[in-house]
Length: 448
Image (cartoon, rainbow, N blue to C red; front, side, top):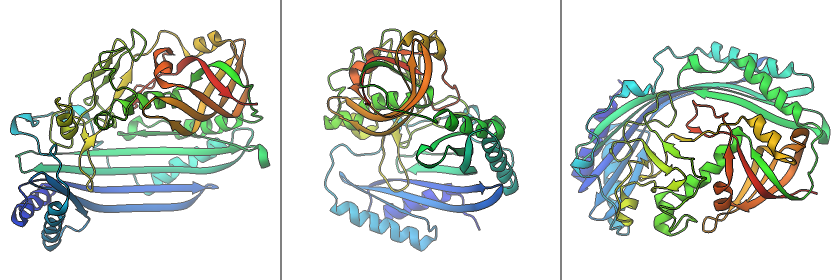
C-alpha cells in the first residue's frame, strides 16, 4: 500500500526526535518517469522509473547531518534517523545553521494559480514513440542531414512534500513533458551536429515534433563548411539560445554562498550599476506554467517576486537562512535542496528586460563580428570575472551573415561585458530564464 508523503515526512520527524535530534526537517519525493528513444524509425530504448526518495536533516545544537533513502519501511526510517543523529554529533559546529522561526514561515499559498502540474493523463509509451519518430523523420528529411543521432521523448511527474519540527508542512505536484532531436550533417571530418528541443509542464504547450526535428536538421546543415575567423576584437551577438549563460554568471556571482565565502567579483558592488541603465533582472517564482516556480522555498519560507537588478543597479543577494545569517541580512526565500543535501541558495524564474530592436536589427548594426550559437567549456575567474569560453556560430560582415565559424575562443571581462550589452526582443517567455539575444561590443576573439 502506498503511504502518503505527509505521513512519511512526519514519521521521519518523529523518529528524529526519538533518536535525540533537537530539531529536524524532512522531504519526501514520489516520482514516475518515462523516456523513449527512437533510431531509424524504430524503438531503440524505453525506460520507466518509479520510486520514492526520503531526505532527513537533523540538528543537534549547532551541528547538522543529512541522510537519505529510497526505502520507506518503518524500521528503515528509524535506522535512518538514528544514523543522522550520530553523524550530527560528530559534525563540526556551524553557528549559522537552524530552522526558520514560526513567524518566517509561509502560511498560505495558491498552488492552482502556479499551474505546476498537468492533470491530463500520463502519455502512453506509443504516443511518446510517435513524437520521437516524427521529430527524427523531419530532421532526416532536411537536405544535407546524413543521420539523426538521437530523437527522444519523455514524461515525468513528481509529488514533493516537506515538513519540519518548527511547524511547517506543505507540498505540491509537478509534471514535465519533453521532446528533443540531435541531427548530423556532412560526412567525415566535415560533419556538424546541432539540436533542438522543448520541455513544458503542460503537454498541450509542447512544440510540434516536426518543427523540432526540422529545426535541428536545419541548424546542423547551416554549420557545414565552418572555418576559423580572424583573431581580433569584434562585436559578439550571443544568440538567444545561449544568452542566458551570461546572466547565469551574474546570478552565480550574486549567490549568497559565494558572497559569504568572499569569492565573487560582485563583492562590494551592492547598490552599484552592473547592467546598462534601463535594464532590470526580475525574479518571479509565481509565474504560471514556469519550470522554476515555487510557492515556498526548501526552508518553508514564502517565495516572492523581486528585482535582483533594478534599472541597472544591483539591489541584493540570493540568500537562504544560513548565508543570510552570515551576512547579517534576511533570507530572500531562495533555499533549494535535494533529499540528500542541506539547503543552499538558488534562483527561481528570472527575466531580463527586453530591448526595442530585433535580433536582425542588431546583426545589421554589427558591421563585422560574430554570432554565437553554441559554447563549450568555460574558464570564469569567480573573483575577477575574467571570461574565456570556446564557441561556434556565424561570421557577419557588413551586417550580413556570410558563413559559419567554429574553433573560436572568446575572452573578456564579465563586469565590463554585462555593463555594455544591448538586448534584442526575441526571448522565449515560457522559459525559466527569459533572456533575449545580447550584443556585446569589443570582445577578443582567438581564431586564426
